[in-house]
Image (cartoon, rainbow, N blue to C red; front, top):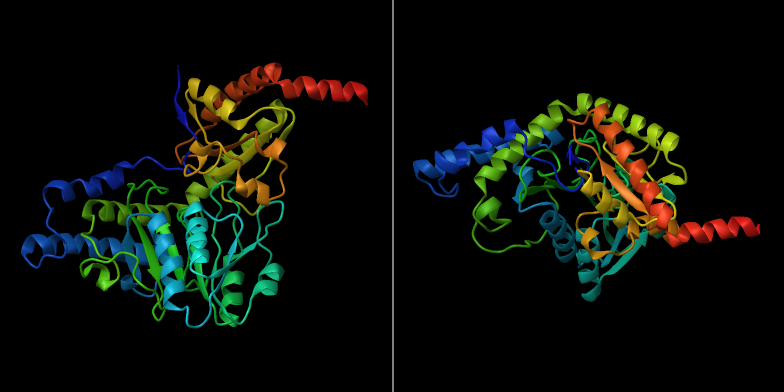
Length: 396
């Protein structure tokens, strides 16, 4: 194996040197419990407050106290969905979401359905975009929450969040968005976009795993998910993970600072990758929206072969990719996201998600294309679907 190229950054990223440098003193020099009132605790609390300020500034939150730290995006999503539903159930028990949300949203909705809540799962078009007309059609008097993700983790589609949030507020409905894949990929301004509640996470933006946050606008009724001490303004019990929080704050600051440069570079890489794919490999389908998608994600279907086989052979060549969300890729099941987009199973089964790091180069892409061309040719040569397809063409 000559090279190792990691193209699964939508699953997780490495921790950048700047972020790691921010975290290291928290393990040795500033190790006090941030809720302790002695000097060691106050030092840690100052680090937490700085990180909270950095995150609030990056998303233009009205104040830093609108940021509540969690163990990651999954906890933030669970808290948002269940907490809002339980706190507002006296106003209604109807919730609207989309059919392509992250598993943590989908599973939270299923739990609420067991409690008697009614969930509407909005359809999407062939690119994964939620229709405003469909949203309006399904809003009811007892609708208390609309939750639509900002950026889809499998295909990279960007939703019209500002318009969706405005529609929610025109009907006196709380709006939540899962922005885990959006942070660092698109500009987020919670005030301009009229976002009430938003989930974010560090490990998609070159920060540490195991730390996320929930932005909660003032005035939003939300029940606690985790009970315990009086941490996070009595909203979320548990000793704060100061090193991870420090890293999260720094990673968010860097992501905001470098957003334009990173997006410009990744957009050029993405276009180059797609053009080379289309030039070198026949019978492929680009599932990612040509315009309304983030720069770092491309989802591609390869006809006549299975995505898992492509993944394994690319891994042998030192290239890491994914067949979809890391939360479901081990389950060997078809993608509900691609199904919701109307992509036939025989096409969806051959899908691979390529998600690029900010350090990617054209030389890396050329190596990936070379290896991918070999892998696809090899798999198609032994695929029974290839023989069936050939017989079908002869009979026409």
